[in-house]
Length: 161
Image (cartoon, rainbow, N blue to C red):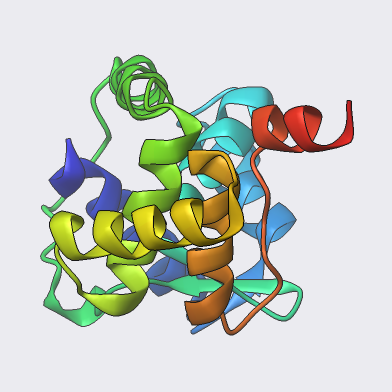
């Protein structure tokens, strides 16, 4: 699936001759120009690619999260008809991680530390400050986070209710 997603992203940027573009320009190109997706599916596809880091947000625009020049686009390329369903399924299966696991995954991406090392750091905070595992994990994430800290909705609900 990844190959088709990267081909689609590369195709759009190369077709438009741009290194960055507005999200709306990207998904309108998918739906209105190429007619590969329905408009709502093009928006979903775009958001999923941002979550996967295949597209990255830069100011109010998106840029590819990989080198599009390394992606070969087959002549006459059209994405598989079921790509949106497969992409959505992949996204849903990733969303099955609980909040604690998502935070650990995020810390791991930012630090390149192993799960055991991250969990030891979280356990230390739990013992020291008598906090829940999710809150302690957020504190560890905050330690490594350079941008605005995103708190998962279910944890936010636990904190503020």
